[in-house]
Length: 370
View: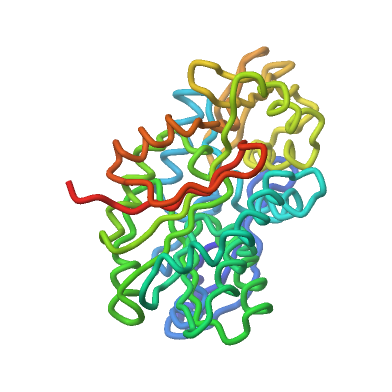
């Protein structure tokens, strides 16, 4: 979604619009008439949307910044890759929500059970009041477990996600369950850099310390884990804590890990969201899921049956028959490897919680002074 200006009889009006692909062509559909500039700015401020006076053509609205658009084009053209974070935009948010609510999504149930079991241990780490910052908040339901466990004060909650649609799900779920919660929601691509402007504002306006949540194996779904953790650390003080949820494994469980993905239609729909937006269909190729032992990660690719063109705005990217497009990576760690990664990015582990199978961990850590 984005804001479009329209001049009528010498006066400028603003509209909230979205781009849709109809019969292979990109067209704009008006979602809401916003009125004059002042009313449009107020609407954008209230709903945390970017406002611009610049006239906008019917180019792709998948991303909320030119930088993301360039990142997407570079990844597809240069590496035959679509970063997983883009799959959570638009329809991908609803599809992801359907996945985490499905019976087959064991990772989500495991993490929720662990959070419920260890919530008080995590909360009691703090000796004073604190804010809760949910990085990659998803639908917000994991954070609720921590928030409901806090007593004695009303916490401040801030949700961060690249997807405005995902933030909408989180806001709806959070405000429904915790009606008096002091909450705010921010569209943030935390791969681009730190978000210290948000965390500093929370410290000044609410409580001086923060509990950062980074759950759902999100750290394992990004290609540059060190960069992500560094961005988070740059947004923290040494009195803050970071709670990471991450999948663990050993080599004997590779087939068990891969079994989570084979035949999972809901998961395939999620990682195909961006290709679908660009005009491809799942029957244009086949999915390939493998485990890369050298990188300790699951990799999912789409193999094209025939030559195809990917349409992105006014651009066309051509693929040959048999070419593979990387749609997902999911890193699986070991206790030793995650300890090394955290130490290299400036964190020390405060508490480590493992489930009975020792295939999922909640890691409570804090930044070190260099």
